[in-house]
Image 1 (cartoon, rainbow, N blue to C red):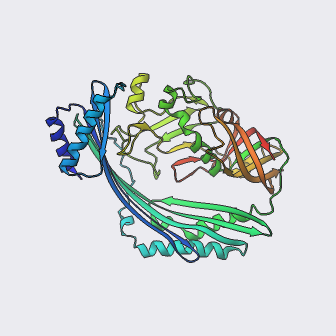
Image 2: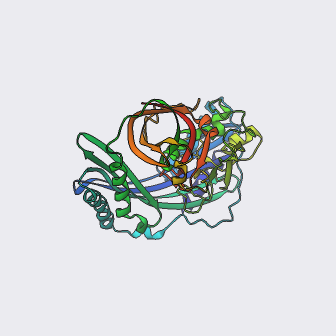
Image 3: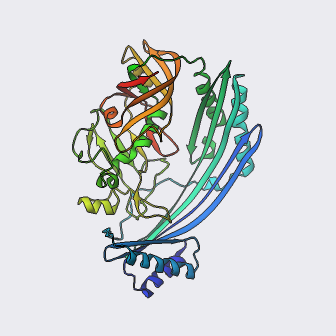
Length: 444
C-alpha cells in the first residue's frame, strides 16, 4: 500500500540531493463503546494517518512529518527535515540499511475483526454491565463496561532500498466494578485482549471484576513492619511496566538507569528471567520488524539473574559497539526512541497457591496506586498505596487496606524467591506471573 507516495518521496529526495533518508508511515483506526446505566455513555471512533521523514546529513539527523500525503505536502516535509538537519549541531550517528526480513510467519491480523457489526460490540458492552450488576447485590455500580478494537498499518522505506509493511489488529473488553457494604466501597477490574472477538467473554470479564471488588470488602488495617510480599500477576506486571525503562540502552547511555555498568553482573535472584519477545505467539506487540525496519527478535535481558542485554535501536547499538535488538520505536511525529515489545518475567512451575505457604505469613498485594508519583525510575525507589490480603498458614486470612509498600526495584529483583505459573499480560503488552518477594517495608 501507499507505493505511489513512497515513490514520490524517492523522486523528491533525489531532486533535493538528499542521499540518506527514511520514511515511516502509520495508519490506524480505533473504536470503543462504554456503557453506563444500561445506555451508551461514550462512543468513540478515530482514524489517523501520518508520515514521518528522517534525513541524515553529515551524521546530523533532521526530522519532519506530514499528515497529508499529496506530493506537495511530502515535498514540504522533506525540505523541512533537510533544513532541520542543517540547523542542528548535535551529531547522532545513524546508519540506514536494507535489513532482512524474518523467517517466521506471524499471526497478528484477523480479517474477521473488520466485519464485526457495531451493534454486536454495543450488545457485548451492555452484557458486561448487566452481568456485573446481577452477580451480587453489593455491586452497586459499573463505571466502566467497555468494548474496543484497533487496527494499525505500519510501513517504512529508506534510501538503501528497504521497503516493508505490516498490519495488526486486536480487540478487548474491560469491566470495572464498585462493591459496597455498609460505608465501605471497593473496586475491581478485569480485562481480556485477543485477536478473536469470540474470546471477549462478558461473563468471565464481569464476574472476575466483581469478585475482585467483593473480596476486598471488610478490609482491616495492617501493623507496620517488614513482610514477605506476594504481588499477584497483574500487580507484578504493573511494577515491570513502571520500571521497564531501566533496560533501555538510551537511558543507560544517558546515565538515567540503575542498570548502568551492570552488564554481565547478577542483578536479580537466580530464578529470575526477563525476556522481550517481539515474535511471541499471540503477543499484543508481536511484529515482524521495529520502527526502523530492523527485524524482530526474542531478547533475553536477564538470564538466571544475570543481566545479558539492554534494549537497543540501531543508534544506541552503534554507540555501544553491538547490534540492535529490534526495539526502535517512533510515531510519525517523533524521533527514534526505544520501547519494549512483549516484555515479561518468565513464569515458574509453582501455582500461586503454593507461594502462600513459603512463609508462615505474608502480604498479598492485588491493587497499587500512585505509580507515577511514588516511583522513581532512575533510582528504582518506590512507595505506593496498596490493597490486598493478610495471609497466614498458606491461605488468605482477611483483606487489608490503607497501607503503603516501599522498596527499591533492583533490590526487589534480587529478593524474588518465588514465581508462579500464572503469567498474564496487561494491555500494555507487559506481563508477569505472581511473584513472591522475601522482604519489603509495609507501612500501615
